[in-house]
Structures are given as structure tokens and as C-alpha cells.
Length: 334
Image (cartoon, rainbow, N blue to C red; front, top):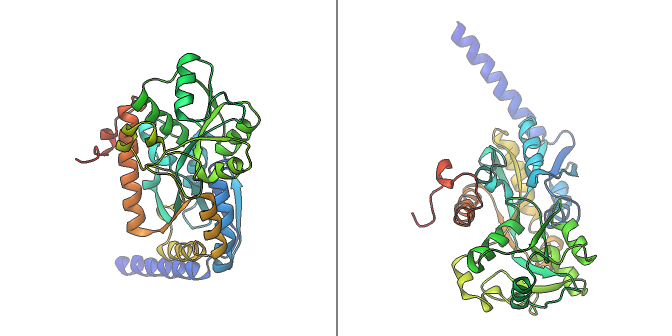
């Protein structure tokens, strides 16, 4: 009798969950963007989400929640109910939290609704910087140690990975690191002359470059981009970068791991269709982003490989607090 009663309760719970999923969304959805306004993550999410809203038939209220290299936003979403009403709109940084000592959670605690696109890093300089390309920058840093101001977004951010890559190839950089809450504020500071150099994603910097408000020093890729042909590839200056490239950030929408499967399916379907909207695709192409639009097992595989390659790059550069091995992350090729 007790067994039957428990079974009946379980059936009622399942039925109620199914009903909730069928009605989803029945209220506003929170979209928590883990970087500041005007940055690449913010631009991507505010461009694609209106199209997803139309498909969902609901409203996604987006909010920028900065700090902790995105960890504050991630932890906030992780602490909300796993019901699909709080989305994490993030970038690559959480995959580095554990090895960088920034937190105990990463994307393994979430379900990827959609990994929308990936970007290509670029090194840009203030228009008044006393160098015009990567080689000139390196020579100036050696001749003027402790003078060049590099923008940063904290441990595990894109600038820290690119800087680690440079130091692995070229040796220690004697520069001043100036922290910002995302590449948007940092690029604004760069254009105003508060910093000299910023490692950023091409999509966030391309309009400023085209307007003449910043100078492209080197694209961190194995070849030039047809979106910005005047920017040389960093491998033109040092072929050793071929061992680490191509590499780049990515942008995705995530929900807590225990979110009902039907709700995840609705969200995934909405963002998958939104990512094909011609306006969004054109924006992404013009900004130099590479479309991905992946979910499920394909997204999980991409995230795993990205984490493996990047954590070991940082480990070998001596920037991690804990070895990737401690978290079961094998060295690439093993």
C-alpha cells in the first residue's frame, strides 16, 4: 500500500512537471550576462535573444552581472531554481575556474542550450601607441620595460590566455596589467588612451578598428581574416604560435543541470532557430565571428576539448593554481 502511494505521488509529480513544461514560459525569463555592457558576450546575447523570444512566445529580461571573471553570474544562476527561468549567457571563462582557483563550479554543472559562435582573438593598440604591429610592440616592451599598459579582465579571461600564450612563446612580458570588467570597458579605455594594448575578440574590436579608434597589431590565428585583411596573423611574426592556434573564445546560453528536459528542448529549439535569423547571421559575419549553433552531445564535446587544451596551456605557462589532472582533465594527446 505504501509502495502504491509513493508511486501515485511520483506519477502526480511527473504529470505536474510535464504540464509546467508544456506551459513554458509562463513568466519572464531572466538572462544573466556574465560580462559588462558593450562587450562581445553582451553584443551576441542582445542580438540573438529577441529572435529567440519570438519563437518562445515569452520575454527574456537581460541583466549584466559582472565580477569574478564571470563567476558571480555563474554562481547566481546556479543558485536559482533549475526551472529554465534563469539563463546564464556566458563565454568560455567558467571552464577555467577550477584550475585558476576561481570557483568549484563550471559548465559541467549546466546544460548547454546553445553554443552560438566562436571568436578570434586580436591584439589591438591605442591609436597613439608608439608601435604599429606585433614586432614593433615586442621591441618597444623590451626597450621600455614596465611602461606598456595591457588591459586585462582577470585570471582566466581571454586577455590572460592570450598573454600566457605570448609569454610561453616570447618569454616574460614586463608590462603593467590594468583590470577591467570585460572587454567592452577595456576597449573604451583603450580608445581614450588609459591603456596601450588590449587582447580582445575580433568581434568586439572590429568596429573600433574600422573607425580608426584603435590599431590592429596581430590577429591570433594561423591566417588573416577576410573581415579585416589589414590585420596580420601573429604566425607571420613567430611561427611558434602554430602550436597553439587556432584558439578562441566562444559564447553560449546555459541552464542549470537539473532543468526539465522538455524545458531545455524548448529553449534549445528557440535559440537554434534564432541563430539562423538572417539579421543575426549578418551581424556575426560582419563582426568576424564564426557561427557554431550547436547543442547536446556536440556542444558537450566542444566544451570538453576546449577546456582540455586551454587549461593545459595555462598550466604549462605556470598560471594555474591547481593542475588540470586534479580534476580529471587529461593533457591533450593523452
